[in-house]
Length: 232
Image (tube, rainbow, N blue to C red; front, side, top):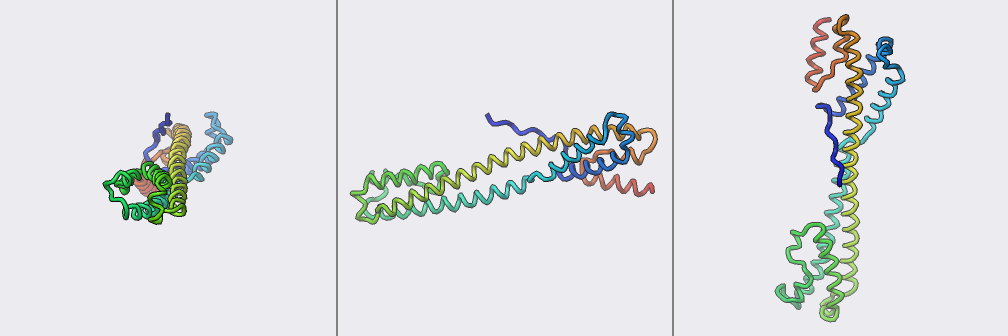
């Protein structure tokens, strides 16, 4: 059973999570003397920063989607080559057998344009197999082993491109799951750090208290920044 991706525990972009975490780490360094009173020492702060650095290095979904799109395009090109090699044979077969005859229909190429990837792959293999079975009837039309080999090779290339594309889809699912998990861990640590920071300054310094406020959007951050600048 496929593992369901976890839900993100924060409502802002990953880039904002990273930037907010790094900013709060800076403030915690400033206030480390007070943080140690909460059993939050410099080593834990270093581990938090290392976690953030690894998170920043993870490929984002745009990168994964781009890779997936490239392989999807290659798969589509391989599919067209397979269809072309099949049509080449069927045009020759149609010279002798119309599309209502049993021998023509045995190839199973009707509505090839509407076939799924799996159906197209099976169709290509069937065309190669039936062509060999009917060699005595269609070889005179130019359906020789070279033509059959073109279909077989096109099938092999299409199957390979299909597998690569599906692997990339799976890679993306795994990457998204990993990024969500790592992001949630960073957010949980950020909340702990900020709760400590706010508790330190709750009754003595409003400005430093605000340093540990987590904003859910860039607009929230801009508003807070303007308010701080207005007080200066």
